[in-house]
Image (cartoon, rainbow, N blue to C red; front, side, top):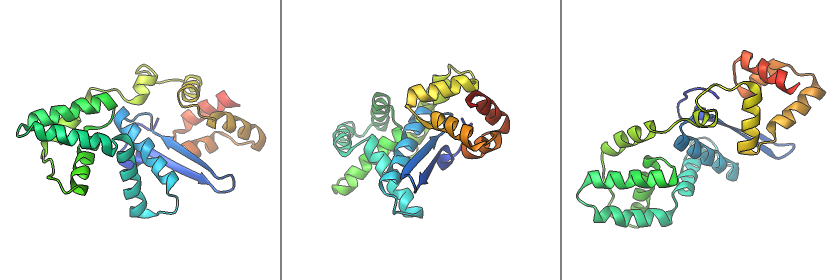
Length: 209
């Protein structure tokens, strides 16, 4: 729960070469559509570990978009949008309805539709800045993931750990508990690996130890 962050600060991937284990941290304070995108984005990095820098980021973005709104859906949506011409308002509303149905960002859908058009030598759907304003308003109607999971209240450490384990089936906290008991680490260690305030780290440490 890192608060309101910009773009890539909402996700972190750590690879442990000795055990071939990948850990992915995702910001629960993200709006649900962004959360799904960053989860898929980090999965893209897992599938292409040899890529670096801009190439890696471009691949991960493309992977996430294609996973969330694949070509088959983009093809169907493109044909629908062509039939709605010349009404940009109706086109935007259709994209918003798809975003609601699939719980993904309208912008992801818009970009994947035009990617389909580009790769098939078809005319692009040009909605200008209107689609971005519509997407911003669309996202405002949704809670962040943390607000949904914790009913808009800040959880204590016990609630936070329990919900994380239940909803995401993560073994992280059980592993962390074992590590803390054998390596004599303190709250400062938790603060570093989770990138959270020391006070929160102390509460988590007390719950696990």
